[in-house]
Length: 263
Length: 310
Image: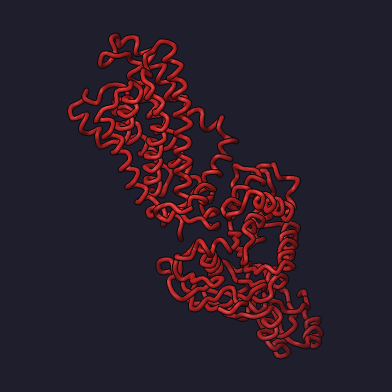
């Protein structure tokens, strides 16, 4: 089956399946740490620090404030790790893409298969985190107050796809693995702190305006609206924002990856 | 393209910056034959292979593979569906078992589930890895990895099988087992292209050989014809002691059809070596070896250096 951009879905699914097989071997040692990180933030910041925040932010409970945003960041972490370090290792060290490219697969099929897997991983994180939030909700924290919260799971998929593509774009642009420390320190970490997960972006001058141009901000806005059943124009704008970024990167990334594998 | 020509290359050219890796070569590969590219490292063999299995584009010339125009990338998926590949470097998936490696890669060829299973089983048996099927690849020996590479390359039941140095770095026994597997392919009439810098491998496996040097094909033919056309049938090899000068062999030059002075040894070529052997016996302190000429001698004559030269 052919997708737009001359991507062969069957070949992409073969690449996706490779990752599923490896995941079955390694999920305990590779995947869980990335999932625990936001969980620890939820307990440490939400339940711990939240106690001292008193009235909470914007009149709500602090765990309820940060919970949906942390789900968005979990989805981001899961996807972006796949298309940064993991992808780089497969491409340059394991020479696995050379092996894929000896089959009928083209680099665009491989890239799309990797993206499907990055999205799958963000969905796994999304489901796991959702279960935790449901548990905390029943424990008395007013986090998920609407049935629309179930849409947090597809939202995690959309956030994952967007960050999977952003990771692929960066991976296609670098030659040494060391440069990822810039990506994480100057891009991922600031987004984690200033996208409105822990406090409103309006806390800083032009905070809203700057955040609007960063991807995690939109994931957080969508997740928060879904969790509270408070869908609004902003959440719609953020959804469209993420879809547009995905569409643009889907068109751009395969062409940028190509010279990395062709010699 | 007539039915029996599987690959046709005309003026094939590829450069990397200023370095011309493949410098306008012509060749044809016929259905069912074993075709070898023989040459030292850097001769352009790997680049030629990469163009055949569509990992490198060409800068010039034309290339037809299995009836598809391979001058552009337009037909790459169709070509790659019919061409099996064993690249020079092992790039097995280290994180998976033998069986998983084959199962995952079988999914790229559009088989039904049942076809896929039977193909994977057949390839595990072909590679003689049944006992290792559930072992992680990283636990395999070099020879087993290479056999698994060969099996993986054959998953798509290719019409053309391309192997880049299939036995480099293997011990003699492991190499022998790879050759046995390739002989099996010959019985199945698979068309095979391989590169090697082992003269023995080329002579033993290949129906026809293209000798490459510095990006060009410098000779092409059957092993027997290459030897017959380029060098006398026998050679007397005089191995000098470390303190001897090759000039002590000079009196024998007149009895040889060709002389190669390699400093530590002198090669004296002739069709009838009796006189040479008798006179060599009169030299003090040298070792004398008489042997039939091989592709190594052909290569030495054509390029001025041995295949082992880096």
